[in-house]
Image (cartoon, rainbow, N blue to C red; front, side, top):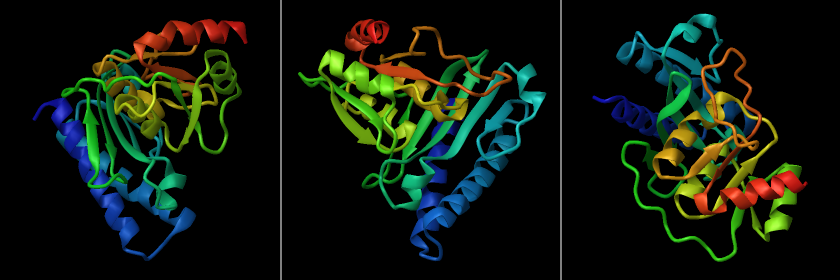
Amino acid sequence: MTDAELATALAEAAGKILIDVRESGLIDGKALGKAGDQTANQFLVHALRQQRPDDGLLSEESKDTDERLSKERVWIIDPVDGTREYGEARSDWAVHVGMAVNGVATIGAVALPGLDGGTVLRSDQPGELPPMAETPRMLVSRTRPAAEAVAVSEKIGAELVPMGSAGAKAMAVVRGEAEIYLHSGGQYEWDNCAPAAVAAAYGLHCSRIDGSELQYNQADTYLPDLLICRKEWADRVFTALAEI
């Protein structure tokens, strides 16, 4: 099984576990989110330790150590990206299973289990991007839209589209539901490693909002901003950012 096949199988399986936990009806709200995080994380961590024991591992839900910093290959996972949305039984949450090789997001699988029938987008099987809308659509947080994103949207005439998790927003660009995902409100490596790998495989622009490369497996896992968008819009977004 290739690394990409493993990432896909794990993301899909974790998604099914999370749906089962939610549909049990035994807990809800914040408690459901916490239980989902812990259950999916335990599954993913144990599976990766068994399947790829020599690789490094970084998970939002596990205590970080310096061991991964000496590894060229590091799995970076988010068992439930969008815990609030998962707990509220919304569809805009995701499971991220990604791998950074020498600091670059190289392999990724993003499961969207909340969609009808569920789906997994993967870096090893990119499809063609759907046609763009005439008026660009920009994805922002449904609870706290970043000021920079709002300002850029006004300059380029974009329509704001509120959505939950980072993975759901990034995959919405891949799926043709939007053209631009601009985030400046603070994230961590696990929030965007797998989505960035998938988006790049589909031919989207992926970078920090200053145009620099996204770097992973850093000692400080804070990765405060990113831009994932159709390449046709990248220059205009950067120009707008420079003007605000």
